Image (cartoon, rainbow, N blue to C red):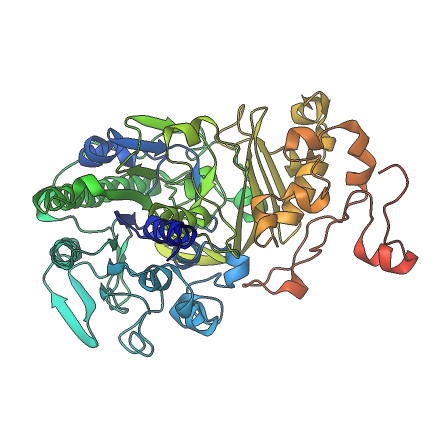
Length: 573
């Protein structure tokens, strides 16, 4: 072998070794845990073992404020409009939709398994994953898994699980204890295998309990948490059961909650805190096990939730499914080898970015069809971050508001069209939320001045303080024109157009951020753009989702180009 051949072999071997994962990753994903209702305050172990030893991301979002679409978003690194999993059950979502879309062959566990990493999963997987379909087919890519099965997924004291291809009922045992025990068992198995591993721990807490008979009640706490937090009430933020209604569409017409409903919400809040404290205890058990197996120094731990939660905010009874900050802003914390300690970061990220980040932690190449990108987690990367400033959030289903008619001692349920598309934009020059509902209602909030999202100037086209205010030294309508175009792009984006949305309208690269787009020379261009609208349909049906193509600066729209035969740039651009 010649010296040149030997050198080439050494370079190749080094490259191969560099791609072999040497660390482990654990993800703990709570179910419905808020960040703005102060639930993290009861997680003392998470604070000391993850936050104090790592990074807390203050601007992390789910892109659909509902369990199954959000979890699929996390597992695939793709926006919900690209997975087409937008609901909880067929035909719009759930495990059957996941399988039918071919995603069971192409998601995080499969990619990790193909790279030689052991993968384990315990807890809630996704909705419509049942005793009838959990093994036909089985979730691919897992070395071992034990997942909650419907109809016992949310029945805390009578849960149903799989063990291999068998259905196992667990009457009388709290589902959190079962989750704890199985997670620790998997860590024993992982340590014995001596291979890099990925462990997903997905407790069902603090989701409401839904018994197998369909009764909905507060989540029962583990015995150790009983009686805790009885003095805690839901935080009285500015949007807490306000005297004047807020929001848009059906939310704007909500009546004020009664004292009885507010008290019930407070009791629900305290119950959720007790449930969350049980997850906090589990995190300590996991860290202690990692220490015992001498794995802690080589393991990344990520803590998050599938979506947020509201209690009495905007006059809403406890729940999610809205685009308000309570529902979409969620916890994200990470610790592990090389992670700076006691850091907070305000870079913008979403669940679409977590699969790319986990691949990066394992030194696995990125997938070209990702809609998300790696979240910075080293000191240098955080300091020099040039991340996107935009998160797209959407919802395609209904919402059900249970209106208490106390004088008749009955309860009536009103079903609302809850289909909307929004863009959450956080820049160095402004912090904004813009949303378009399927009924034509719109919302805008300057989050720097109105973080509670109480004053929506688009509720009426009458002159308001917002219309009088200037943004980037430009009139308010010019900002709206830019936000509408940005939303038009992000609601159907794919791949790079999700990561760099302005490039769709400005392929020359001269507009990368909102600040660039606010230049007055683009006013006429944005005025000619199609406007966002969509029908009130319960899924992502493209032909019923309104305009999807923006005009490209210097080129005009596709139809205009075809009609006029203009395939070259227009004069002056």
